[in-house]
Length: 131
Length: 130
Image (tube, rainbow over all chains, first blue to last red; front, top):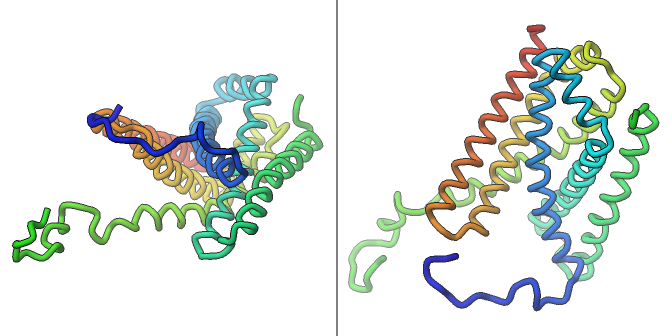
């Protein structure tokens, strides 16, 4: 709690949900998820550098079903953060600020991330994953 | 604060006390690392997918290839830097007690720095065949 009780602006519960706020919240959430993923990647590299035994153990964790689900989650978070990151960079450059453009680009981020994730998972399965 | 009858300019107060002239540094570095990661993330996904089904020796050979090692180190540095900047803003937004906020910021900085050092060292070890 803040040390001084100041009046608060209205928060999530009073707003009607709209796609623009969903993309904003998801960007932050996926960013936090990806920070966790960064540490998983660091752990995998350390295991690979440590030797065969550590690598087999780490690889076994990710190759089991819970691990695969987590990897799919990280993949979606990366796809979403990547796509919506492009959207934010374009907006930083001053483009796409009309409300229709804002709504349209929001949907591109959300739907595009699911499509990208599906493509990556399909390629991964074709390469002999989930085994 | 500047009192109305003060002869000092506001710059005098801003200097050394606030974010004067360094306020956009966070913004710019966050965007710069983001642009780098736009490219490097594609590279990482392709690399990881290519590693599916690889055994230990193949994985080490792939990661240790000079091109892959350089790109991986670049990705790791950009990623942990970008992640540190993002988590910093999350803490600034949600942790309102100064002491707790400072503690969280330190944990994020130390964890990201340590993970970046460890993962880069791991790639270098693999690349040099240690």
